[in-house]
Image (tube, rainbow, N blue to C red):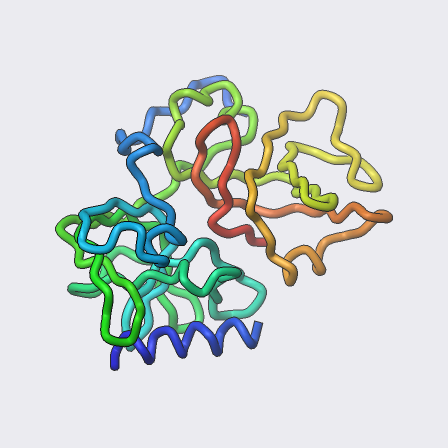
Length: 231
């Protein structure tokens, strides 16, 4: 029943919805190849197996769940969940060390454990280990200069988000119309990243949406997998 309430709660949320000194290297994380995607876990590819997932987590009174990304357009963070199977419950004790907003706790967690299928058809991980990950706060220039240092790490980076069709960039500075400044540092936003409420709040120039945001996500493969972006 706890898992059913949690998923119903998610459905309701969806309906409402330059430093000169090099940065210090963050603690080592497992190679990205060892981390399994939530959609793979949710559709049953790893039932009975021990997996590691690294993803945003929401914790409410009725439980805690991993989701691909979060939206912060309202006071309470809501899941961005294009694939319902990508919601994976985290069993065990409530996670600690999460931030709070609007009565909901959230953060990024790395969790390992066996995958089980509940009677309600919702998959969950029973943690044998878990760690809430605080992002490394960087500038875009620092991230570019230390790309290999931050591979597989959670980072928080401010910049101007530029979205056009299925492509997105985060740039250090942009001029009128969302055109990146000529010498500005920039990074690629990896797909999928689709936050319609955020995009609608950005400035527009023809087919381009742009505006200042702070992005939290996973840096790997010279691109940023977005966990959430906030104005």
